[in-house]
Image: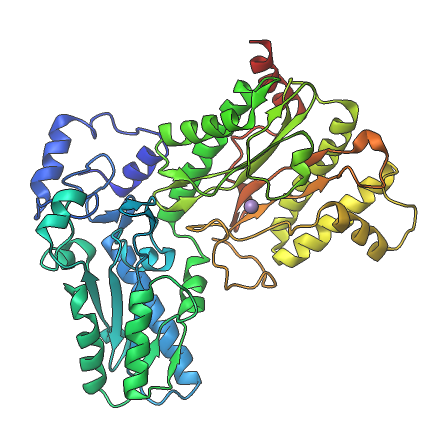
Length: 501
Ligand SMILES: [Mn+2]
């Protein structure tokens, strides 16, 4: 059997043992599996190259999912006790994402609701998980609601995981068809005097489930209800060993893809071609898709922070700003690089690039002091401002607040966000808490000088951002996207290769 450590290395592209991918090993994997049925998502039986023993999703085992649910129940119970909640009876309802359609029967690519995926590993749409506890947090029960059997739909769209197969595969206590959800919720209420209901009515993950919850609230007049979102985000904030391996791989893929795109670029190239290149290089390395619509901005379009039209040509001595990342088995990378399309920075470009690079490195080093993300932002403003002052682009006034304000005008976005299953991960977590080991954050300072700026004309249209993904550890920050070149010499060497062809 393939050990967890070896599978971890396999995902990182390191094969430690010679024989663990042999035919014999693969056959053994198959024989050990109790269920050989085809389910609604990859299993060890159908996808032995992706899923290992006891894993529900790549690298993440049944026990890890069970642990996450246990921790969620514990934190919610603890909070309820502190708030003198009327009973120890809790019902936590987390819906999956639903299938979305472009038009008629044409679906968008499905992407699971991250909170639901984090707690179950279930990758199917139109499903739901309900965690109930009536006495102690350890006595909780997880019920996974899966889609009703439908032989016609399964003939068209492929198999679904049926309730009889779900408990064993996902490690949940029971599974019922989704049509049973309203009955289940109501009967739990009847079995227990007061139920604390945990559901996020604000988010629009599933209208169907929200309607069921609204009907339930109307019928029983239950006032004891709150969103579980922040409790789940507090867990998702700290990455496990398996999650870190997945994030490292996601960053490796995007790093290499962006480096390949640098090499591919040359004057006259279309932003759409660079977009296609980075997308291809990510998918070819095993990413499911890009984690967000990438910014591929040539020339002065780099000063438009969320430029995603990506439909212009990049000329002569212009730079390309590319903000792109991928999703690898549910984990996102988020990297930005800026390079001269002809392989040679102009003096002004180099001057600005150098400042952003120095500030970015200083901010990464600062992570070892475990600041808050907001503190990092203030540091960025001060550091950028001082350096811009040195080259005469910011006035000579000495006050810190003046310098920071001037810098903020040239970099009007935050310098960091949490990263994980979502690109802007755990959005309910404040940026005003100290970072801790196990968290992954981005560091992304930039300078954008628009054509309307009062700064000398030579600098107009220059937009530079450098963004890396950083794992916080007890031994200091680890740059997960370290394989993506950012030093001036390296970038010039790589980008000029494409320009010569
Ligand atoms: Mn970012």
